[in-house]
Image 1 (tube, protein in one colour):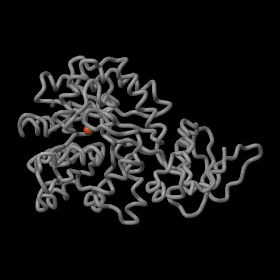
Image 2 (cartoon, protein in one colour; image 1 turned 45 degrees about the vertical axis):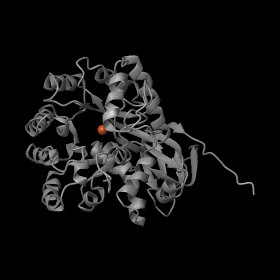
Image 3 (cartoon, helix red, strand yellow; image 1 turned 30 degrees about the horizontal axis):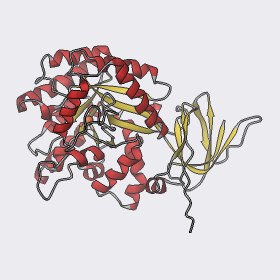
Length: 411
Ligand code: FE2
């Protein structure tokens, strides 16, 4: 099949590409149809590699208001609401909600999702269910599962064993939550445990790291040091790192050297952390989003995640990663022309590095023909006008399409 008149990744000139056996067989402006070949005219629309959700909690999604709404909007009331909802948690409940959430994502051009799954639960029901869903949904999205100890590894009964069991059940990545552990010593020990487990079992790492406004929360330096020493490097991701927003600059300058040496990835969640952080502040109130602009300027890989979709911690979300980028650029003050044009990378190329997708991802000859077509000519306009994802192809197969709504001004 030959696709013509595509503007690939903000290119100013249209090009064509051929898809054969689910792969990009050729890309170039001079391609012409073979006899009898099907031709699709993309009419000068923007073509991007598929969007990627690099940080979400699918096991809690689509539960806002069930059974009670979070009236204050705080993290702590969110935990109270969730503990009431958790009583109803079952395999069928998780499957029904994850199926709906994944379809919301798919309609917005997302083809890869990294989900954190709470394993501080002796039954490990969410973990077991997500492993099944990873298989059941693989034609629509590729799901990566992080064993996420919501209530701590050292601070939760049998926490270490639950992590080992979750890895045995089929987790792709090992998580941790150092800022939630009872003590600083537990925090360091939990990180040593998580990264050594990942090294031993050849897993990725994604730590909920310093998601707090406390500038003394410094799990990040341990994550980076261990990533370097264990030679895990870019297999390791630090998510959230909101305390970094509050670190003093003298410390950040020193820390930046280690971060670069460690080659770890960062995931920022601008929607949720703008909503949840700074809640103990009077005025001025901190934004509580990590230093995306500075990390990016240092050449460190940063991607963006939605984190929560319509659940007790975040009462909004339709599965559109465009909203995440839109908020991220505002709160990180990254609204220069090139910053806006490049910002799709936070939910595509950069996120692919975070997920370690390697040669499986990207619009290049020989790679899987996975791509999306947006109703715009470049990413600036797509972002600004909230353009629809018209079509989403996964390995050469059309998996989602949409028709943009139309409005008319009558006077
Ligand atoms: Fe999270």
